[in-house]
Length: 236
Image (cartoon, rainbow, N blue to C red; front, side):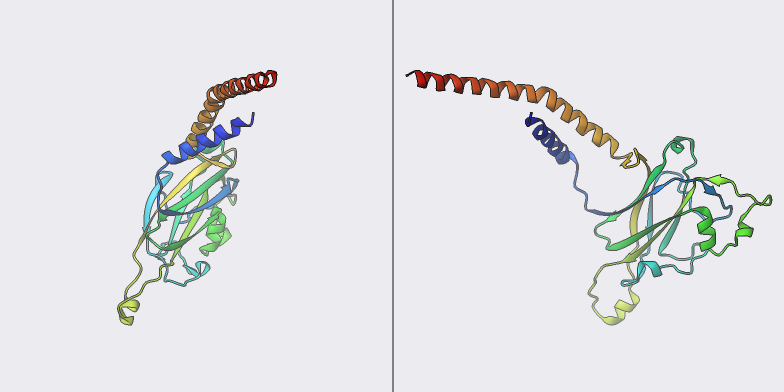
């Protein structure tokens, strides 16, 4: 029975070889979808899909991530951050309790990302809205699972300019990155990974059902032949 884990490992390695190698960096944050009072008027970006491509200017090299865009405003004037509304109230996602937000960018763009997940009321307070102004006229905010993501980035590249004046005038190139929002199956498994996991499970099952009996039968045949040969030598 010890051969089953080996077949599983072989299957996993074969599947891993089929996955292309991508030179990229990734920042991931997992969060729970919890109902909280909604706050109308919070400035958000609605990409219209769960996956979207953006391009932002990173903050200067050496800037602490917590100090980036400290004086933000609803107009989104800070060029080093992105606000996204995460619509978790849709019918397709109502049954999921946890989600993951992933930011991926090419390794050729040296940058560090920070992802913060806020409730609408937290965003309103962060942007300077008073609680009374954010409530509807009846005084009771509707409940929502909507979250707001704040993404900030800073340059981490070390460049050697030709002269000091060029260092001061030259800025970092905008960094392209992909933002992907996914529900988590069983609270831990991203939806995009599920097909790969299912494929590995199928391959491992087939290997344990088909390969193991064949190998086991072959080993028993070899063992029987060896035992017969040993008995023959003893009789001689």
